[in-house]
View 1 (cartoon, one colour):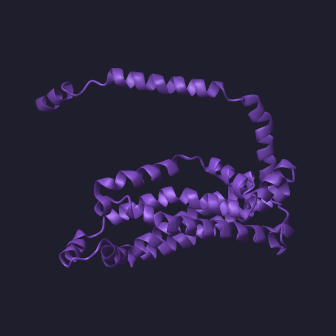
View 2 (tube, one colour):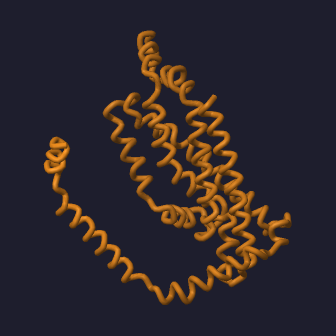
View 3 (tube, one colour):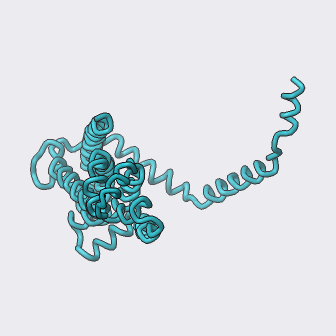
Length: 267
């Protein structure tokens, strides 16, 4: 008992640090709350939210079950296409970045690849989308390019982790046989990475489906255009139909991507 009391008395005294931390958090909370326009939030925001929730119970059904060009199924297939092609583009472009950044491949020269990947990751989502709107104009191609570039940062990082965790024994054996750098990658690394890389790409596709749904806000195609137009015009039932389409597709993609990744991991 005496030992316990002695240890308690000898514990680090963090009272001042905790007081300062709590004070800073409280100050930032009060300061942040002070700049929010609460009257506008409660007068307009809650009214819009109420209208949308009411419309969710009675959306524009013919938009959901129609197969016309402007229908929800057509726009969701377009959104899935944007997400798929963007993910594929990002997955392909990430391969050289990953191999040029993995320490067990390039050693200390990985700083170059790290700098490029970090720079790509630092750009905000909508900034890149707006840049590509100026380059390729509004439309699905802008969405594909935006998602492709944005995917490089995350996919490259995950590729690098997988590459750096491979069994070094195989590389040492290939070194002993006099294999070139290309042969080590082709016969020693890629066979170990295939399942993990596919799992990474599926996971990123799941994220990109959600990203693609909001790209329409900046004119990058997909169902986001319909959702934004309907909300701006006060057509709440049309907006609710778009939301139902997004919810259903995201749930389906999440379910199947999780199932596929589990099968890949478990063999």
